Image (cartoon, rainbow, N blue to C red):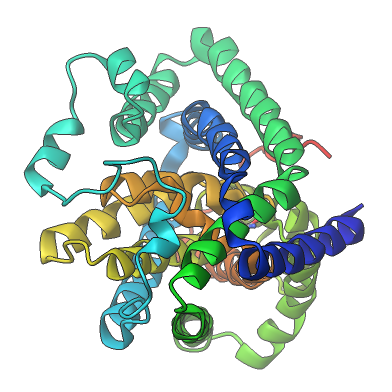
Length: 418
Ligand code: ASP
């Protein structure tokens, strides 16, 4: 099925480009199909973000049990995701791949008035709305994220009587993940329409070649960013955990190949656990840290969201002032931590980052042709980051002799629906 899908994606890219170039006017008449696809993605994003965050935070089992391992894990994840996003933002500011690409590439699929300048103060105010339901109805994602985090911590503090609530949201998250998997089957059709319309607009303006150059630069920059992310974590293995970096990378490569093949860090988790065992990472630490990191440590994804949002801003000539970039920095971190480790999980939360800088959601169309392949590389980076996280937490936890046996609730994070 995966291979068939891959072939279908290739076919729809080919047809989309060909129809966009040769029949641009006809192509524009089926723009609504792409809009429908985007709407379906948007439909799932709010409940998914809520359930994914609640189940990730509550999977720690109890406020008291967060303990030192939980603290080290969260600290590492925050650091690694922040570094990933910083690398992305710096590279984008230095190379500016979006400058010169016609804005019609994005606006071709946008509803009128969707793109406007950013006001950071109003962004801050929207974080704390008086009515959470109203915020959800207006598709304000950040307040929902803040609300979910506080809600999850409250569930943990309540303890026993909140357990059914937690189980409900974990189950609900699995249902949404299933819906996303179904939705991904429609990608070839959505892709054909979205890509075809973007190409049609550009080909009507004869600016295709100029745009292809910018896209190529964007991809190279992103892959270089992922490489840097892998590199600094390799240094952590060598200089902080004092492990044999070559041997660690050697056994991690098994998990990374699986990640490349499946495009899913969650599906790779069983292999990641085996690698951790091979590398003599304390089993209790690995069983707690790896499922948690797989859920929240999506550094490659966070970098992708930041790089893409800024790339779109450059194309649209939108405000790239320091407050706007801080907005991207913060939301990309949250989006990376809230994304699900499934194929193209990051595309859904990208909508959230785009909202913050007022880029039309339809901009994602530009990425769709390359997303399948870029997804494989960022999944590899995510899985590598999870292993380094486990090794680092193991290093700090055992050096302070604070390792306690933590019982993993079986099936909790492995219950990814096939
Ligand atoms: N496929 C990625 C993962 O599983 C998530 C994403 O970036 O779309 O880690």
